[in-house]
Image (cartoon, rainbow, N blue to C red; front, side):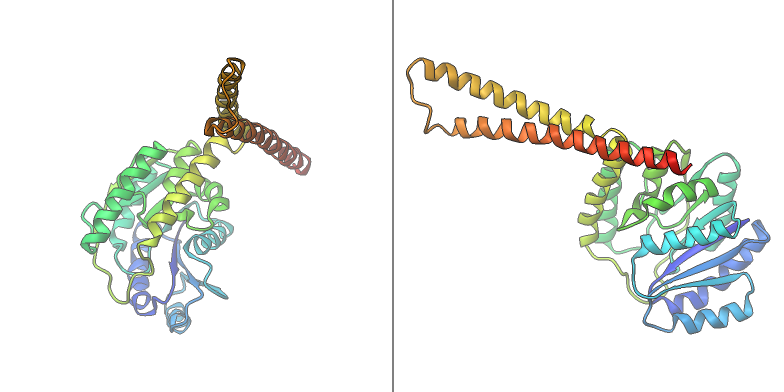
Length: 306
């Protein structure tokens, strides 16, 4: 059973057109499925429009968040509800009308052929010039830093197996929704892309500005850290700390030799640098050990619950 999750913020007019276009595609390729719209605290007529659509289309559902929590939180709520309904495959698509519902069949075909998560890659984007170029730079940086395959990580048009949705859902906070492909790949799932047609926004304006790229870079570092060092944080902090400590010891050792030759070292900036390297190194090593204690306590708590 397929559930299409559509997060929406002030997209009433677009939903009025988009949702009736999604339903026939689901009935064609995955009978018994449905559309789940998550209203992320909209202040327009989204509730009214959805009430009219649900009266006409029984397979359409609505989840209303009391205030704007962000796209990641809206997707998390949508994924959880879809899984509770017994969905075997979960799709997500934006409410602005730029994603074409007719492509759902192609994404589903890729899942049936063995992929765990499929991204609808917008290789010919219908966006402004600045947005296209910044997205291209963002995608290249994401691929280099994460090692995940793909050309359009930021696409909001994705389809995944229920197991993938369940595993990535806990990491959907902040703006982590941009890195669903990276997270799934890091968890060992098979990810792929299918080129899809991209359309201009039907109405309204984009909810994102240039600041999203800076926030996205910070979130990428977070994802990289969690996937690589969640269960072994001391490997990172202790390695950096040991390097700093070694540099500090070498620096202070050199200054000790200089002092023994009778030269003053009290006014040398190198003395302060050496002490700083040692102090920072010791702190990072201790921080890594404390992080290991936290991970160990969490794992033991998980074992007791199971």
